Length: 584
Image (tube, rainbow, N blue to C red; front, side):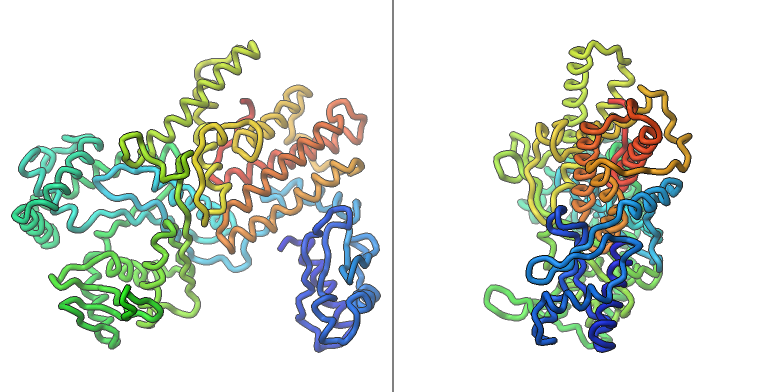
């Protein structure tokens, strides 16, 4: 809730008590943004909810509240509309004062969290010996944006990359490479990532078809777990090879992560099983050690167990996730742990969260959050694939976005008869292409599937990154044309006269509310919607109000409005992991 809304809420709460007595202290005034701007900026809907309790008509209740309501410093006199809505319209002088107050604030009036917490965001999480594909796009981009917003709010954020770097697949791959390419197990960079993926696929086929090879692979896993020097060395080489490839993509996307793979928790797995046993939760079922869950059943309607140790003594994802959860609470001291994965893993998280709670491992002040997201679909409405039926490599998808942007930009430069260097075109293409992919993903409600379309995401019109980057560049074009240094404008008074100035001003002052809501609900699309609406409101202001041609003091006032808009766009886009450009 932004500062203005909070002040108004407090005033309505006080008026409620003054009108109806102390029993109404703490009653929610149901103060929301007005449904229609022509009625004002905010409306309090509490009168309708109190009608039955007070035995009065809502309009009469609203009248009694308004009689005791003092918002004269912030609003015009309140008005009662319809069945009992209390409409509040912000005073122009109040808006001017609020904007003048945030001019010198690098946070643009957004307060930091009152009680900063240690928060963990677990995101991206590719598998070693496999290339990052389009399935990793959403986790990586959504997780990074959530981490950026929490960091901006002042929380102590640990960005964790829980990579798949342990288990049967390594025994399988190492056993296969011993036969067909032993140099890869002793020499760094003997394989590139594409070859490694190809060998992995062949190893999997062999594993599925050949029982003798299965046993050889299992023995390699045993050797790996026992720390056999040659197997351990081979494993480290394979991990390092994949890690370098991941880092290329992370640098392209400007993603910062701390890698802590499944192998990190391997020494802790036996302790997880022992402690579950001591707590009386462990049940042996067909040789496996399990915890039975409430609310989960198999197809036959029988209680569903979560296996924490297989019948052969091996562990699985659930064991590792339980170990990592305990470590993050006990060692990392996290108070909120956020897991950003596809919605298909929802049951898995619900299950191991339940086991951890039953075991008493989750303190009351620790919050566990699964942040699910939908699928990336092709324009045919099906899972996006290559024409050969494979998952699209993330690197190829990003390169294609940059390439298309480069082609479009060169054409535009030629049509406009501009002289631009190849270096300029390359940089703009990189920023716009990568930003377009990020924004297209983040602007969707993360719980939904979305259709991936280069044409839509690269469009200069509509709810896209290029549209917002263009608005930002347009503002800097004003400064170049007028030879204006926004930083030298100082704290000049803002004067709001035109209706588009007022609309833009009101929207600029909603930034803190939007960021606060994303901090709580972890839905970055709300920030995208805000930035898109802000961009549209700026364009309406730009189209209808002269800026450089205006007379003083209006000219400087409008330049300050331009600067505040640009700074808000830059801040908001940076929280989405998107760079800005002063020229496009």
